Length: 192
Image (cartoon, helix red, strand yellow):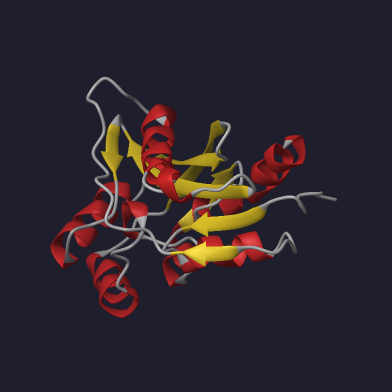
């Protein structure tokens, strides 16, 4: 079991999925919504380093609000296909194009997590592999119109309708694909 009683734990996230997953650990925490964070990153970063960088940037936005017994958790998820990074779609057209790109292919879902206190910042990344079945335009149109996946990297939520009909194969953490690699987070929090 986690013994984090000396900390006030804060999840700085706008994601309902991250809140749901962290709640599964049965630890007390509060949620702070994130201000608008610039999610750009240096051009020399690749893969896991991108997600970790953005997770750290989210944490750094709160550094001046941390007191001695605050433990802050931030995260960022990206989708990687053939070296191209897919973040959150900007609109319907962008979301549909992302899903067309992922259709029939295998991609990586990478989440970077930052655990930050006043004294230190520990960060890690987790990668999962997802293979999508071939999607037709009607399926893509239906999903984007009904689920509005504009807050999701790669324009999809694995726990939604698209996950039921498209995901053929997963290697790695399912919860990572949802947006928070909760098993690894638990292990890292135990070290604290």
